[in-house]
Length: 216
Image (cartoon, rainbow, N blue to C red; front, side, top):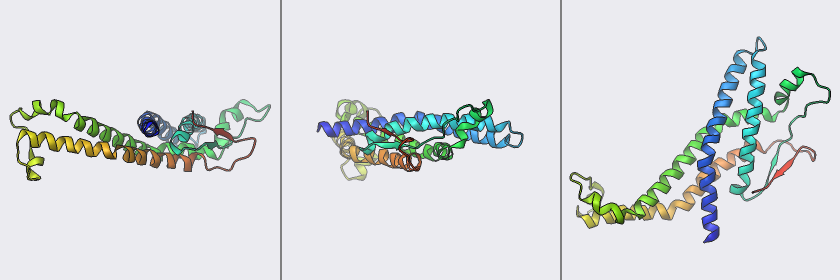
């Protein structure tokens, strides 16, 4: 039971806290690519695109740190091209674009956003449904006495429109949310984590360029 609670807490934290990071990643990727591509002809956009790639790399590292807790195993950080010794200021400025993984880091920010949004929404809905339903017997009696309160669901199920049926049906819905909370949140987290694993950890690795990120 403790392991189950820990798993649920990890998946919930990953799904919910991952949304702000995904939003930032999306904004950086879209704005950076748009501004960088628009000004690339005059070379003005290249530093912007390089800066976006550097920020996207950092945000990708945040995702890589979170992945082991969801996947249950460590993941490898792809190698990035180091700045050559004695490189000039322009070479240093453009260095983030010299790594092949930079394209995937930027692309991930765009592709992963809808998955992150869906994972967060599903997680919030299931938690809200479980909590609201399981505690419905506490406050349901108050709602039952509000004139015009909709009782279509109990009536549709043939249970009548009485207070007991109204409270019982809503509580049963909460029980259903609670029983499916763990697998639903787990699935939402795994779908998002699998995308991150595919796009952020699949590059070719070398002993000098790989850093194992373990669950913290």
